[in-house]
Length: 119
Image (cartoon, rainbow, N blue to C red; front, top):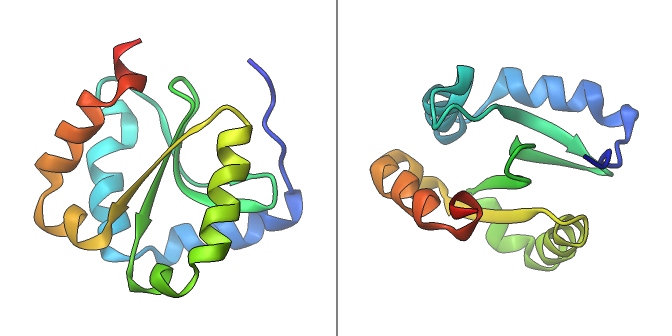
């Protein structure tokens, strides 16, 4: 497997984000940590290039982003970031903060139907 680009200067920030964690990220993490979801290993607050993604599954080349209200103000930045990650061959899926909090089952149903899991 190809090594993903990595900016080591972002490692302390990623660790800080893991400790802070917002509620929807903690809910998702509790459902996927320790290979609880389909036996897949997810990383939380993973540094990829000059970005920190919310969740990353190397086996599936999958990035899961949980978007809160602040993302509506960063559309251009998010689009550049999304394209960068896709250009690395990664699948990027965005879920809304409220979807995680109110419909976690639906989030996982969506992931299961997504082509990346059917390969």
